[in-house]
View 1: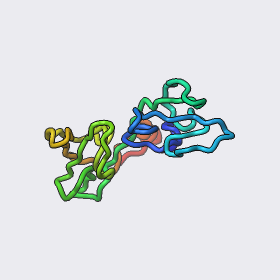
View 2: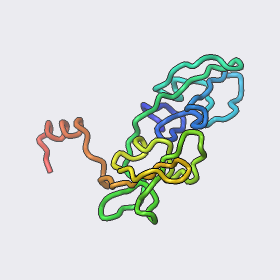
View 3: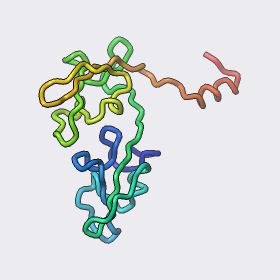
Length: 158
């Protein structure tokens, strides 16, 4: 996403190749990017929370250290709340071990805590997958402290 996370694509709160420790590569401006999902011409624009790893084949290699992203709940409204996970399976989703391919990126993740901030672990199932259930999120995001301050400084209220 854009903004404070940089411009690169975020997957489970990280930039870079999830199969290679969330690393990405910075190319010289004159070279074409091989994989634009995790290659860039400007590392600091691509990701705002990174560490330099070293040089590999003439390219600068970086690792994304992760971003907290707002998680409003991805699914349709259910009883005034939004839920992550498979609605046909009680809003369950699965956390995969790093390096194992996600079967359904809509409700599979490598990091349950960045995927959903209101979930409960339900146990480990076959293949080392951890099962979680989303408990639901407010349909409208809560107001920030700055919005609350602004509201009251203008004498407004609800």
